[in-house]
Length: 456
Image 1 (cartoon, rainbow, N blue to C red):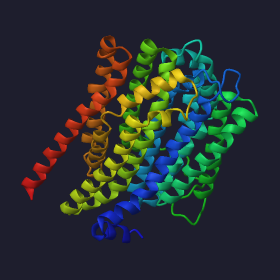
Image 2 (cartoon, one colour):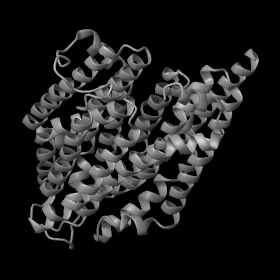
Image 3 (cartoon, rainbow, N blue to C red):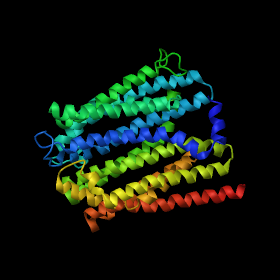
Image 4 (cartoon, rainbow, N blue to C red):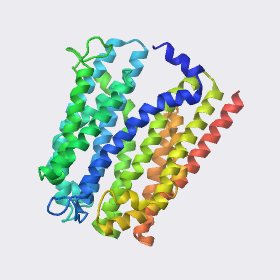
């Protein structure tokens, strides 16, 4: 199998290859996004008495306040998960099977240690952290109740996301996809039971999330405990090795920093929403963010499918196949984001009304959605170009693009525009940063194309 894949990457039809490699990733990414949407829909309809309907919107506003804290947890998980899966892939390719086994064992231990440390620190300072993120007297109880359960299950979450990455690197992308889908299905089934039947409210949603991840984690351990697999769990691989830890962290530092920047951005957005629109504006942003993320996750899935095709053909100097793959991926991404643009501009109420029956929040979400997707047709191109640089080994350029959008464009926009434009200034900072980032991305790509053409 290891000899067959490179051959097909360099010879098979690009459209068929992209379909073959991208479809499982798109399904997994979409399922992961639906996982968050399902939670938000049920939470958005929790009334003040914990029943379905007559929602005042404070529950979903409380959920939105947890996004920065969740981003920090994701950043730590990505550092271990992405770092470990990359190191494992490299070691397997170098036929250093024993080292790959120890990377797997160290990944399990690191996830447990970091998950426990993050849980302990955040539980101790939970309320001050949530107030820093914009919680009010009305929304703090919801955010506190939700994050308490999520943090108590943080070791499970870290391990689940980390081992899913390991499954992909070990040659089981379909099984990693099935784990994600299983988590979504179980979460969707448990949400209404815990939230409404057991009258647990927002804590029930958090418990459904943790238990669904636990079920998938048990299956992951079962899959990775098969002694017939090249990479499997067994005694003697769990002792922490400084060299392996340094390699994991070095590779995983890039997604860690990017997710940390995302935390800062969401923190500033929540602060702006609260200052200029109150708790209802935070809830509206939480709704829009969930919907927008669904379309972005589909593009991320396309990027994951593009990555091995571009990487192989770039290394093989088959430039025509590289550019063909890039053009086709951009075209597919544009279909996705233009669909999101049309839905956001012309049918926002159809989407936002799924999350709450509170008219004030849906009105604000509809308005914000239209602004949020203004630059969507450019976002798909920007995301594909960023991943393209990563695929050809220019990770620094990819990181530069991401950090430029967030730190150089979006953060100043969130600071400068709201004092002049009020709540609309918070919303407008998002598409404005996307437009500026698009020109940076296209400029970098054109520079690369000219450089390649001069050397060929």
